Length: 526
Image 1 (tube, rainbow, N blue to C red):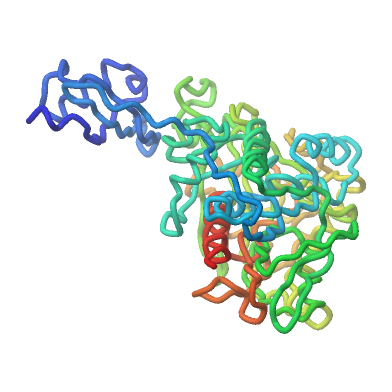
Image 2 (cartoon, helix red, strand yellow; image 1 turned 90 degrees about the vertical axis):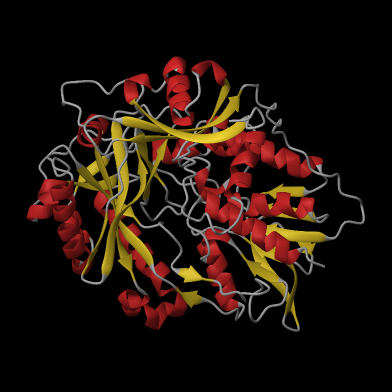
């Protein structure tokens, strides 16, 4: 092999116990290349994943190899955005979640001034508004786990794994997060994750990049009116009486901004129903999931080199999907309600993922025809009305505040009340209730069949130590705001760009960020 072949990408597999040994890595790479170990001058880890499919756990790694010489220096990832001139055209972006923030940064790159409007508070102030919902059961309706700077992901995990690799530059999304303070490990891990304790600082740094370049970010700016004229949008107004004018409006409000859907409906702007999913949060001891996934005896601790184990389960029962959703290893269940007459649960993890609990959504697909009973009164918003009916039922069954209804999974399968409930990570607390009677029968039947199947696939998954907690209803939007395939504009409103999860075009932080960038590209063409 010639000396010119100095930078290569090589995949190796090592047993877990050798995976952090620098000499073992060099020897494995040298063996793969059929060169002396002394020829390996530098290894740079580019990809890392745990393979626990067999009893001997292995680690798969991809290295960039410096062969017979050192590798070039790594580029310094730091925010670099052009300062906008005073004459820069403006684009209004409604919503400061990942779709909105990445749309704003992309607009700056394209020479447009983003004006970001967010109903909630900045991430620092927003943190204090989580106290009342956790400790008092009182929801601050425009500042909570769903609304505020960074969107729902800021305080509910920051999972970055995505299958949307064909939607755009996923690597650029990760690098943007790293440039703003996220750990560079997310560039390497197969299932990257920032953590709810780190993500707020990252999104605050992104906001500062937007402002430093000349963009605007307005908090407490809840949009209450779309300014329309002759089939095109001219701007928006906010509840506090301000008016923002632009012929380009990116609507990136997230899946829980129900008032926006009602506002669009009242304005005569076309909406469509779409499938979504509802169900419960299922919670196990993390040690149990570790033992099932890593084949660890129940009386043994997880090896130090292994992260908290996760899982993904999916099947189809009677033409409806039943699947795990937003699995949080070493995590917590949190209250995700946005109004005080409802209880909604979601999951999150800190960067360390060291909680003694594992939780996941366990949900059933809901098709538009499943909500037809609400269509007469609510029309295209029937899915939202269906969600709301479950959320208010959970509130009533919990008995007050944000206390949630709970049932042992074994009792749910048997159709009986739980006399007691296992310990939970859900801080407001849980109250024993008949979840099997609160949910519609067609969902219960599919959940039971799905859980029975999953219990056979993961022996030990169905256990007395497992809670079902209600309800997980905000998996995605029941509504799609349509847009043209070519221009990404609403088919009836020129200049309006529906974007992200709330518009029905994304399903997580990364896919929302990618969609925000696409919409910015479309909106800033002229």
